[in-house]
Amino acid sequence: MKCRRCKAEAVVSLPSHNTAFCADCFLEFFSRQVDRGIHEQKLMTREDHVLVALSGGKDSLALMLELGRQGYNVTGLHIDLGIPQSSPAARSVVERFCAKYGFPLIVRDMKNEGLAIPKVKSMLHRPVCSACGKIKRYFFNQTARKGGFNVLATGHNLDDETARLTSNTLRWDIAYLSDQGPRLDDADGFTRKVKPFWRVTEFETANYAFLMGIENHYAPCPYSQGASFSTLKSLWIDLEEQMPGRKMNFYQGFLERGRKVFQGVEEKQGEALAPCERCGYPTSAGMCGVCRIREALAEKEGCPETDS
Ligand code: AMP
Ligand code: FES
Ligand code: ZN
Image (tube, rainbow, N blue to C red; front, side, top):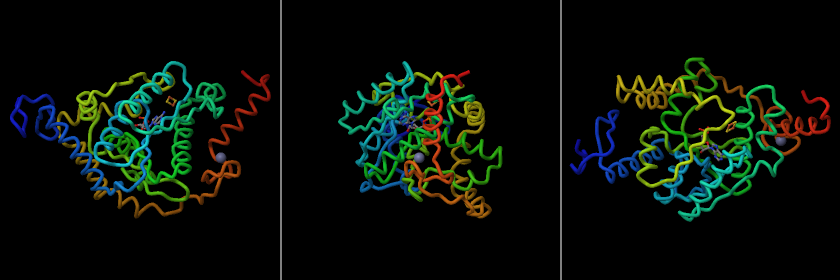
């Protein structure tokens, strides 16, 4: 197969775009998709101070590299979750990556915060993933606010977004459907959140990471039951094979036509937010979720006999 742009031998075939590219033209195509995604949804400008959340996975590293190449003002943020084996491996990939490209990096270590995930897990009677997500989001936002960053970027791609949209649709979750998207504006003490990879798929990102020589860390979290939305993602792989391009149509159609319908229905009756009584983080519950986790941990440490 030949590259559509330069007629050299193609190395990446993209049925959803009905095309194929050689390595150089693919990288050019990928950059244009990211640029278009940023502009179409007005995610950010080169004047913004962008904190990029780096997990150590290929998506977020690829995001950092591509934003840096496009001239955005980027700093990395890694949350070290304190999970044996997987966290040290992820952290060292992120540290090596930032050192190699000269990107500034902030690391927040959950052990130093008394919030290492295995410890949090030991006090819960349910999977730790939602508490872990809460802790990550808390430190993303807190680090952005303290450091003067006005944008927080994550490595979510089109597959992540489509799977999430499908999940929200299957539940007709109007609240989520009314504000899902690649840009969540800053409000009430929360920094603006953006997903600049919303127009590129996992497959395209993996190709980009491979062609750019990004070292890949793949050590799935030992506590998660598999990749998030994995069933919906594999349904979409089948659907996309039968109907190339449908994934992008579905998601883009939602952004252009669907979301506003739900925004009209969803009364803006979100609970009022006020600063957490302990730490000042915006919350609707008096004390924020992370301070409640801290309190539960302190209680547990105070009464070891209640351990089961
Ligand atoms: P996930 O929910 O694990 O698929 O991650 C989604 C995005 O969240 C990644 O692309 C990163 O931008 C960010 N992220 C996840 N885990 C971490 C972490 N430990 N430190 C910093 N960013 C993270
Ligand atoms: Fe948070 Fe696995 S990464 S529970
Ligand atoms: Zn708090």
